[in-house]
Amino acid sequence: MNRIVTLDEFIIKRQKDFPYASGELTGLLRDIGVAAKIVNREVNKAGLVNIIGEAENSNASGDTVQKLDMYANDKLIECLKNSGECCGIASEENEDFLALPSVESKSAKYVVVFDPLDGSSNIDVNVSVGTIFGIYRRKSDTKGKVQLEDFLQKGTELVGAGYVVFGTSTILVYSTGSGVNGFTLDPSIGEFCLSHKDIQIPDRGNYYSVNQGYYLKFDVEMRRYIDYCSDLNLRLRYIGSMVSDIHRILLQGGIFLYPNTRKFPNGKLRLLYECNPLSFLVEQAGGKGINTKLERILDMQPTELHQRTSIVIGSPGMVDEMKAFVEKYSTPTPYVAPTNGATTS
Ligand code: P6P
Image (cartoon, rainbow, N blue to C red; front, side, top):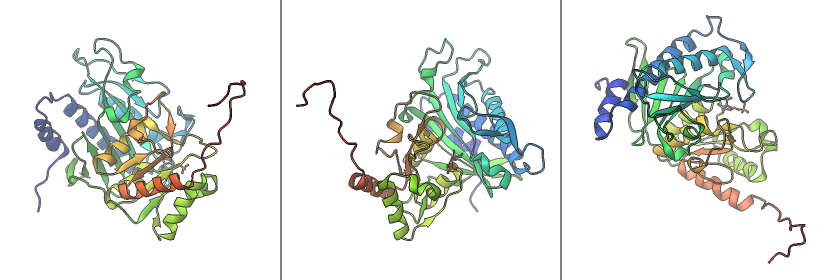
């Protein structure tokens, strides 16, 4: 039987691999691990405690906020204050970013973006949900307050990212830029234990993940690619919780698509705290994440906290294949001559 390696032990050991690491990121990751355990405790008994059901308010994106979302949001913020390594957070559940008070007059170097409970519409029907987080080094002067620019950073600037899937078991998967590792919570000892070492996404897989209900609202090239997946007899799996769909694809291969639709012309999913952290992880595991304009997700320059994007993410061989469909079938935007009388060369 393999020796148990806890998340804390792994984080500390990995810190030694970075000669200049001073422990701040270690403290931050441990805070997130604690928050995950606390949220797990409530998610596991959500059916028993009166925290299920729609809260009276909605979040910045206009989604109805489930009480468990708010609970998870509050716990993550509370835990991120512990080590004093985080100076600000941006959450799906908060309209604006939050500056966190300094602890023991530390000048914290990091900000954290997160979706506290992704796929929360699944809560009432006991289907898996998840937390997604991304960690950036702040850009603004550490002597001053955290600024919006600290959050509007490209995904390539992430120093760490991860997710927690609250499913048949609770698994925390993260990367700080040197590979992806997964830890399963052992409730009997209250520890996340290394269970998925150095995750590598297969080049291809038997799954494709898309909301088939919007098929007729997708652009033609997307519909052609989805037809192609169906022709290949790939299996359609779509949970309605991105983090759960991506977890399957990370382990078994496949492709997840949320293209633009008429209702969401720029895509529905959020760039900062859904697509960037998950694309960082998938790329670290050897996969790819692009938008339907074929731009690499991590290269996109965010312009607002709750910005949305289309996304196609997963096995590299399958993302490349989808790109070929877009290049072959997308109808180029018709050229409209300038009407100001200027001559076109
Ligand atoms: P739809 C959950 O609300 C979420 O943000 C993702 O986790 C999920 O993949 C997607 O939206 C589901 O959206 O429009 O298919 O219900």
